[in-house]
Image 1 (cartoon, helix red, strand yellow):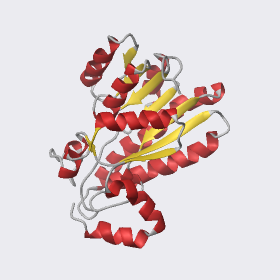
Image 2: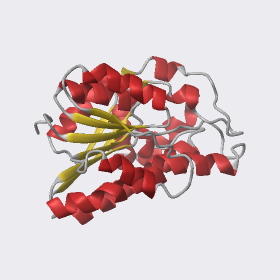
Image 3: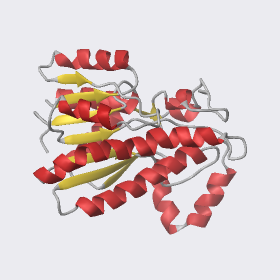
Image 4: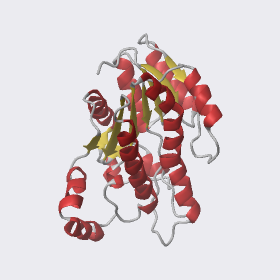
Length: 264
């Protein structure tokens, strides 16, 4: 797939993997529609790529609000009229035990990671199916394949993303729309620092796993290659994260014991 002049809508574009994807795709000639909660962050990203001769537009959207986002999504899409590729990279994490985590934490994480994805997909899908063309990319996680301690809210939401994308892929298989589920492992972003604690407040600290993880730029390049290769699903991880989804399928009891024995 050649990305030149493609109209790509990226959510979560002001930081992390979304930001890296925006810059990498701009370098390949894609025109960008950028969304996240941070308008200032989006303007910074857009400003950094406009000099390359591509079009970069900003549409701030807060997927955590838990309200009908249809008017905002339609207004965003109308800036381009047509979206060729949707990349849903907006996301939030949580780190707390099931016993300690407030119920609102589960709802907040699902709102952004799962319900936000559904809203964005439903906004672009009619035009994609009518044109018999388009691609939908959802950033899930290795945690969407294998659960672990203190990740029940985050992992549950990412499992939901994988299930949703499997169903969507089957529905649009004969309608010209490609669906890619991306499952990264540890990537060096602020996701751990911004993760919600048991009380719903940001933890404000990173982890050694994240600090030692893959660079966001490297992850973005591998995602772009997967889109170009028209893959259905890709795991982007090193170490145990690379093999954990496979081990979960072929020897789940062994993997479950390993996960239960690890300190997080």
